[in-house]
Image 1 (tube, rainbow, N blue to C red):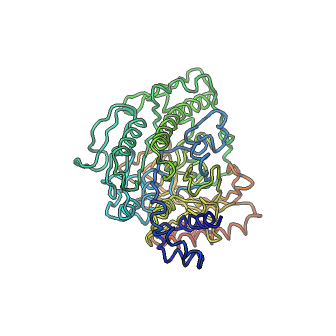
Image 2: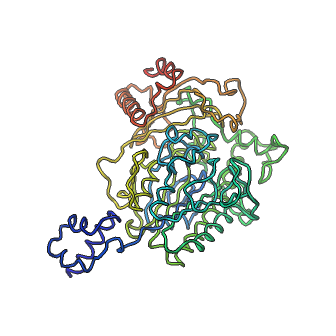
Image 3: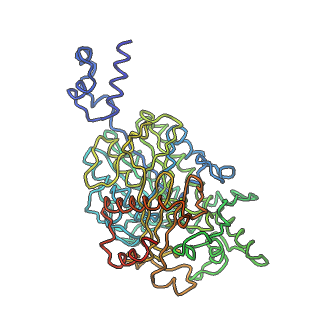
Length: 556
């Protein structure tokens, strides 16, 4: 009995830190003479359990609402049984958020543990500085074998990885080019060799091949990055008839009356009706929509919007189904090879995606569906199956958490924090109660104005400041919905404020910024917002043009 109890104590304390020495362990455990008598039982704590492997699976634009374990309005129509396996055997995190809802900046934040204004990636165009520290480099130094396979989208050659095989920029759905380590590297969209097949299958094939051929004497860190379900949504032929004769439910906010919005957001964004035009017309390059033209003849405006929504969702969900199939392949491989028990398995997306909510598609906005990242994690040694957490996690926390599992303290330059204890069911009183968000690419794509804000556990305050500040990413910025002079050339748009009470209005359908009852809350949130900007070194004083806007609109 005493032996079993002591063994449990040994395991508990070692799980708190894989780098305890025997002396530190005995001191911390406080076992006294019993511990001294058991020194032969624990000759080296470092041999009690190996550093865990880390498998990080990330898709692109996969909304939490499209994953069945999150229980959205789509749950009755959409099934993701393999992704759900991770939640069933691990934990579902309900409040995981990106700090900038766009591909390249989010990926840079995940890799570095820093906001874009610190890692240099503000926009889709910014080249990632490959000489700066990143999580893969730290794990390499700790003895990990590291690899990244799939979508990279950071433009410069990956660093910190023993092996890479990545798509140029966005990559192609069919017969994609891939750029493999050991061969000549060319930045951005240049270079690569064709791999025949469907991109999601190929990325999984190459991930499993790497796992089969890796060094078995080292723990691994594998980033398996899928292109799907990023638009334009090209699904594999095997899924062509998935959702035939099925009406995908419309989100409750799809027909939102936006008159409650501020002038800062009211006229902007890409709606489903505009998507219908893209689907039904010949594109700029003389091509029809990749999954077939949307037929709209004889339909009224409402019917066109409904038809476009159905096509959008079915294309999107058929791509997502291929992700789920391939997540299952990876999980099965780990099970079959006995790797599951000592592997931290993560599934996420680089940001969220609007699936008709607020009559939007795409992302970028600070609204919940764009902000929220699915985040599911499995690790049998520490995470209780079927766990759920509602703590606020942000993408800068990912790198510190990976390092924590490897026994590495969070580097001082990282702005995020490890949430490993939250996975175990313990939340520190010091854990954040709010998060800061900023979207920089003013009017560059989908007519989304630049904005920043703060989200607490209950409220969200957004300031649409409407300025480009030289951060629009000029080579990729092409306004898709160019219908008015205010949408051209990244001109300033009218500023505005919005406040949402997420407890009483989780779908963000009532902007209460002008409600006198919320005056005190707004004042407190503005103080918190400025404090967050100062703490994160993203102060507006760096931009005189923005300070002029603040002088006019901050207290309105």
